[in-house]
Image (cartoon, rainbow, N blue to C red):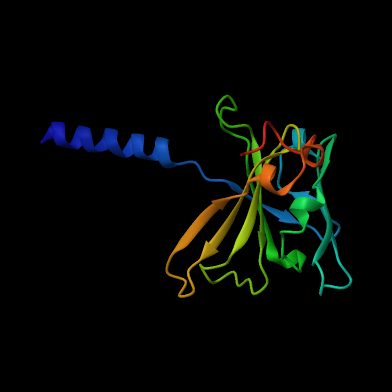
Length: 177
C-alpha cells in the first residue's frame, strides 16, 4: 500500500511539473500598449491600423514592437486577417521557461468577425512572436466545422503567400514551405 501511495505522489508531482505550464494573459490598451510583460520586454506595443472602408480589407497595417525591436507585418499576411476590432484580439505570453527549445514568446490571437468570448468555436489567426526579436516564429489559422464540434489548426505557408523580399526581416528563421 505504501508503494502505491508513493507511486501516486510521484506521478502527481511529475504530472504538475510536465503539464503545469500556462501562458500569462496580457492586456492590450487602447493606445496599443501591451500590459503584463516583464521589464526586459518593455515597452511593448501592438499597433493595428483598422481600415476606414472595411468593404475591401479590415486592416491596413500591423506593427509589433517589443523593447527596442519592431516588426511590421507585410501586406501579403495582413490581407489574410479579418479582425475588425481591437476587442477581438487576445494576447498571452511565456517567458519563464528555458529558451533553448522554444524562445520566450507572445501569442497574438486575431479573431474573425463574429467573435464571442463565451463561445469555443471562434475562427482566428494566431501569431507566435519571439519576445527577444519581435519577429514572427509561426502563424496558424484555426477553423471550425459549421456545427462547431471540431476544429482544424492550419499552418500559414508564408512562402506560398509572399515573395521572399516581403518576409525578409519579419520571420524568426526560415519560412514554412
